[in-house]
Length: 89
Ligand SMILES: [Zn+2]
Image 1 (cartoon, protein in one colour):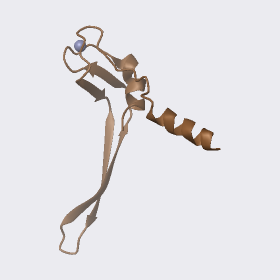
Image 2 (image 1 turned 30 degrees about the vertical axis):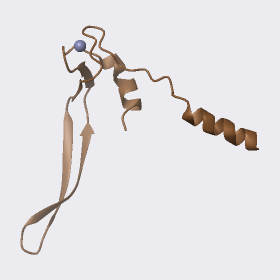
Image 3 (image 1 turned 90 degrees about the vertical axis):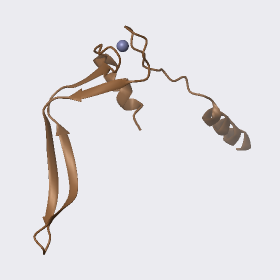
């Protein structure tokens, strides 16, 4: 049991081989742009007793394509987008 626990700790401490997204055109690995087409933004409001409105929430829904670009040279990096989503926290 103790050995198993140690192994677990050691695994967590190990640096994962993270795959940085690098623009193949200019080498940029820092700035990226995500563009979503056809976004429906829904915002909820409540009307207060003094007739003013307060926003209580908003949700946006992407109906169209999502593209992913290099922030430096605007090369289309959309094939990296799934990996980008995995690494987005
Ligand atoms: Zn680039």
